[in-house]
Length: 230
Image 1 (tube, rainbow, N blue to C red):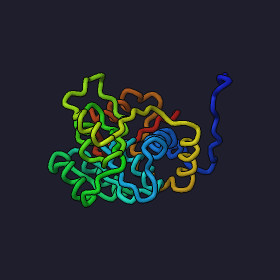
Image 2: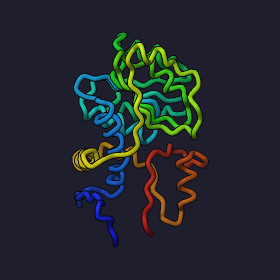
Image 3: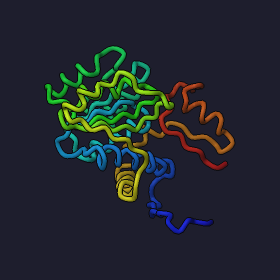
Image 4: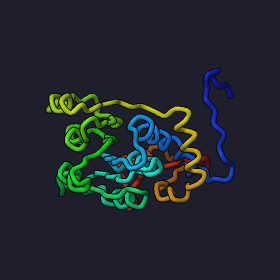
């Protein structure tokens, strides 16, 4: 095996199930987005828009960072994922199809609003625009959800300027966040087991992708999929 001279190599524990260890990568991203970039810490309030794999792991990261309020938003079709968010550490969830997410954040926080809003939703611009009214003055909106190169229309620039709101884009994890993720999975991996919903053989790649994209279903909500050799 050839490794680039600047390759970063992490030592993994040998006593943790392989499928759980595959959570290290998305969890390390969530740690960087919520903790390192977002600034989640003891007593902070975090709103996470999107209860997919990354959003649910962001709830785990926020809880580990010490956030006192962790609010996860999703749609009615995400009911199972929102329930799982509560199991993983979220303190409240919002169904945006049946509730006004901004009003609910105001209500849940007692008007204090969020310190950080993390958008991990795919395609939708609404969480970004709504985030301006969810985050407190001087707060931060972290953008991690790709939007297929769509432009952002209707963004309240003046409100963001006058309230000194920070918007920052994020991509992937670094060394420290990966080490933290390894430690979390090592010591609390079984609590993350509900995220590992499906496993496919290497010859079932198309089926795995279609399952993850909700094109086909076996009755279970696909969240984190692993591919294993036959």
